[in-house]
Image (tube, rainbow, N blue to C red; front, side, top):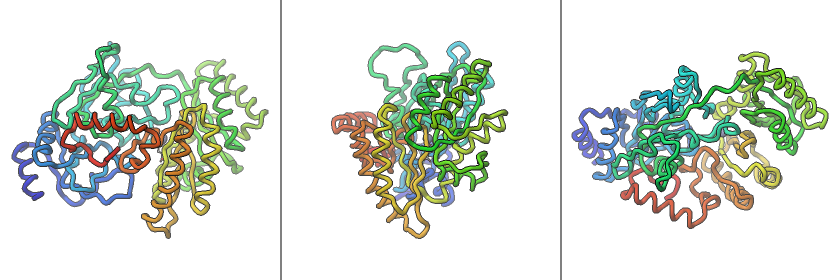
Length: 461
Ligand code: 2HG
Ligand code: ZN
């Protein structure tokens, strides 16, 4: 049966590159989650929009599910293919198509990695400001699919803010050219924004036009050691008032322990419970002295115990590594990940409840807190004890996530801030979205993908 349907695909699209080697099925069938065993039918690597449309047409005719696939750095199982799906990799759709100096946009194919996009923008004297640790592998298509956030959201916002237009091949096989780079366009529903964050459930993004902006002024990076979690939001408020921040990230001593075991250098002699990495404009003397006086004021108030300010690009990179290297350093412990958000104003009250819930719920597990606290976004990674089986571990964690979802609901938060819902969090979608909202989402999905071929099982059933 599977040989027959693949033969049909080969006949319809003779030039389409298909991979069926077991090693390829493993490689392309998973993302950074390690909970599911990949089992795709095959991997298709289209090289044109027409080939993508041909694949969608074939999938509808043969009732085969499609899993769109970019750099597969996702953490929610959105790109997992474990049920005989055809993976549609955008790996060969990896060209930068156009730079427009007047509109200050880049038009790219979906498989272009974020780092390539950033470097290309810099070659034109501009920047693409969305940035995160997986920049080298994550593709723009996938970051549109999850509305990726990252480390610069305090200043620049999420991916959504930077997408001027996109082309989508819907689950029907239609090609939609959405917003076409316009700044102003008040002509009805903005379908571009429906696609951003839709996790491959409405179609496949086949082209994107991203906005660029001026590079920021010279900046410095500062690492701060904090005595308590309670003071974290006060430190943020004070630094935001006094400096022009482009990042404000936090992590705990447990995170520091793991990242240093992976080669990062801790600049402090003493152990502190909490740390902040922050970046801010430091081009003028005024800005530089504002940093010092802000730091002194935090020390005096007892909100900060120690600090280091970068003196070179290499030192700035070393300080960033302490924060950006965390995910990789935790990977060997197959962590169960929470990626939650509340409004910044709701953070103190939420934190008080969440900390006591997780403290009681996970007495025997190592829990690593870090994240984009300046955006109200926390990453809580629970590490699996080696001796515990994966299934039992996930069951325990899912029970706690249900309780956490209730706390989030009370504080008006979200069960997924920036990683998406995928397979991992669909059980909890109802804590963030109302039944009426979910019904609308289902209706939209039905219109754009009537046969349910686009990433089924992801986001919602
Ligand atoms: C980050 O902020 C990423 O480093 C990954 O969003 C977070 O590993 C995680 O939980
Ligand atoms: Zn993050």
